[in-house]
Each structure stands twice: as C-alpha cells, then as structure tokens.
Length: 47
Length: 250
Image (cartoon, rainbow over all chains, first blue to last red; front, side):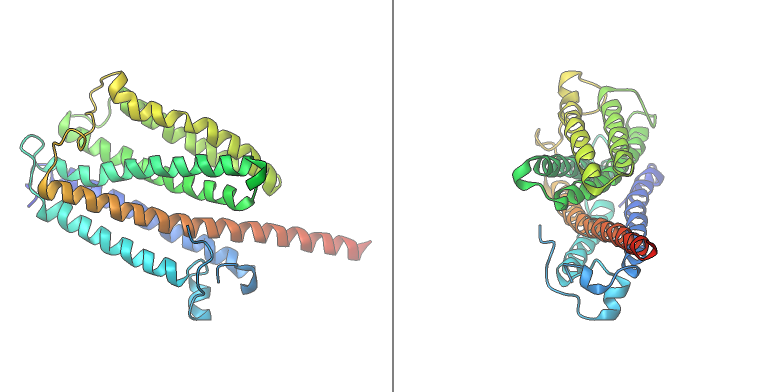
C-alpha cells in the first residue's frame, strides 16, 4: 500500500495522467460531434 | 492500422460517437481494462522500492507515457515522409501525422508533469535544468509549434506539405532526448529496465502500463484521425457550397 509520506505526489501524478487523457478524449468527441452534424452519414468512409 | 473497419450498429450511436466502429469500441474497452489494471497494480499491489519507496509507483505511468510520446512522434515522422514521397502521397498520411503528433503532445505533457512530481520526491525539487528535462521540454514545445503550423490555413495540400517538412525536422530531436542521459550524464537516471533493476510485480506493473498506454494511443489516434477527416470534409463542403452560390449569383 501507499505510505502517506509521498502519497499526494503519487496519487497526483495518476490523477493528472488519467484526468488529462479523459479531458482530451471528451474534447475530441465534442469536436467529432460538431463536425459530424454538418455532414451526411455517407461521407464517413469508416461507417 | 484499421481505419475503415465494420459499421456502427445503430444510427443513434453513430450520431453520438460519429468516429466509432465496433473495432474502436473493442479497442477502447481493452485500453480501459488495461488502465484499471495499471491503477490496481501501480497504486496498490506492487511493492515499494528499497531506495525510492512509494515514489517508484510514478514510474508505471511516467515511462509508458514517455515511450508513447516517442512512438507518436516516430509515427508522425514516418507518416510525413510517406506524404512527401510522391508515390505514396495521400492526405490520409497527413491526417495520421497530425493525429499522432497531437496525442504525442498529450503524452509528452503527462511525462513532464509526472516526472516533475517524481522529481519533487527524488531530488527535492519539481524542476531542474538538467539535459534530459531540458531536451524533453524543448521537444514538447517543438511539437506544439508543429500543431500550430498545421492550423496556419491554406489548402489541405499546403498544410500537409509544410507540416510534413516540419515533422521531419522535429524528428531529429527525438534521439537527442533519448541519448541525453548517456551523453551528458545528468541528474535524470539512465534506463531502469535495461539494467535489470526491476523485477517481479514491479516489472509486471510497468508492462501493464506500456500495454494499456499503447492500446490507448492507437484508440486515440484512430479517433483523432477520423475527426480530422470530418473537418477536412466540412471545409471541402463549405467551399463547394460557396462556389455553387457564386455560380448562381452570376
């Protein structure tokens, strides 16, 4: 288990990492939805 | 990398996640499970280090994020070269380069922040101007510049050409960062895994970090590349509509 001594730094590094990735992902999906609204479905070669 | 896999099951899901397919959904779930394992092993199940104590737990995210940033910038460089080479010239390569660079900047930022927190534990300070840290920060700023160059405007082909040249120049910095610990012997430690300092659960935790971050990288790049494709199509469509309106006027 994590000793209390450096816990804020260790937990902080995990929070910053996972939080940063989550924020980036949410922003990316928001941009995708915004762009997709302006296009018909046929213009997505992967779908 | 599969960029044109099988269709999404419903139109509702397609509207909510326009860049998703069955393949990306499965990949995303695998990455999420891997990250759950990483947190479990990294924070709770792996033992403390004799010297670094709890500080070693930052290694399981710091090293994988640095590795992913290198990989991402490598993919950006190779895709850019593929775009510049006339026989393989295709905007898909440019979009892959841009998507990979953006995800690489994200992971490089994570490397810098997690390294800074680790530095506070190991060296008593968040930042020092040692060779590894300075070259890493320089690489980070260079790729932010690359992303800014992509947004300068012009046609898709102009964007692709100028950013491909810049990506190839930026690639020259990657070995500088990697070998800085050998060439200048700074405060930053040398390779931990190569010297066999890690074993057992510690090595396993690092392995989980590498696998889950790699899956996450692939998942993010596929989605980001598709968002760039959608944006390009929106631009083209806007141009077509503007030209049609102009023709009707005249």
